[in-house]
Picture 1: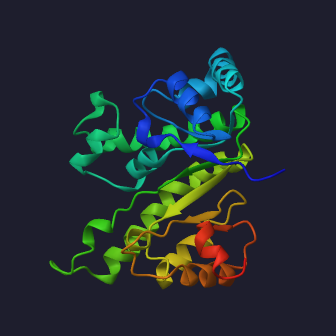
Picture 2: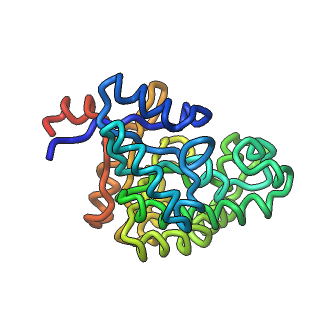
Length: 244
């Protein structure tokens, strides 16, 4: 089977599904990677409602489109981030300015995403983990080693129960790594990735102009982990230039 060329729908989550599918097909895409928010896929409903899943699948079939991945970036961000008013833009409006409720919603919804992916015949959910230490990037006020260690432990504690649901459903979670917030080159990050040993956890590395860490470092990290399940996905342009 040749590689599908699919459109990630996050940027147009306010567009109705049929309009999105019609445009994607007209532009020549083979499929879509559906956002789990907005007007696209409701993960809780897809996890629980057979008729809803059948409706979405029928619409995909109408335009001869495939859906092998779901995206849950803004939901995952609400898991690891905490007490940030910007999360009001991601969570349901009734949870605004309630950080504990936002996090609880995000954890539950990420679990629904895994079940929804299985029911939609997808194999992967892409997304972010959020970060309780990203706010400490600037060097003042000073950040202690203990604060960083506690932040990584918090991510581990939050995400292991979520990833267990992914594992139970045979779905992979593809972490989209932006080098700055995730710090793949750090020793503590290695420890967290090693602790996340679940057959469902590959690693998607997105390189953007302005990134100051090189993707080769991520490659070396994943080889050191020696976990075949932690697949690294790099931009095609990067791979071609290195003989892949």
